[in-house]
Image (tube, rainbow, N blue to C red; front, side, top):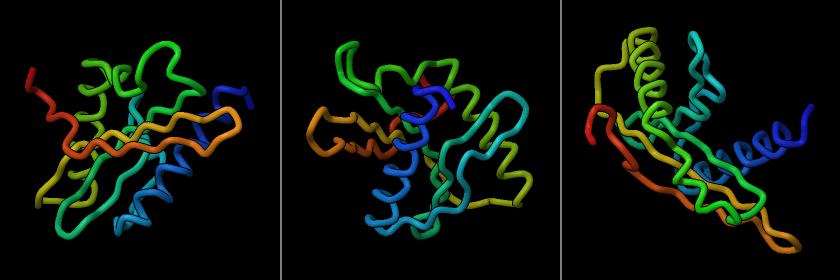
Length: 122
């Protein structure tokens, strides 16, 4: 496995653990449809949460959350719609971003952006 894939997998694991510690229930990980993938699908109360995880080895090129592009948001929205149709989900939903920055000699920095975006809004 390529180093960037290993880093991404580690970040997704850390993000899932972070969300579970905050009381979320992890429903799915790496759910795929067509060319889109939802890193984590979680539930908190009656809300279904679609989570994009961005992992970086540093902030050298900027904060990881800046790399959730409009294209990625559209892909996530399409995948979320397919997931909701597949499971018959009809209640609240939201799109979150969890960033993980791996520290050199220090603990990873995990930040959770709740309601980070809503597809279709500028």
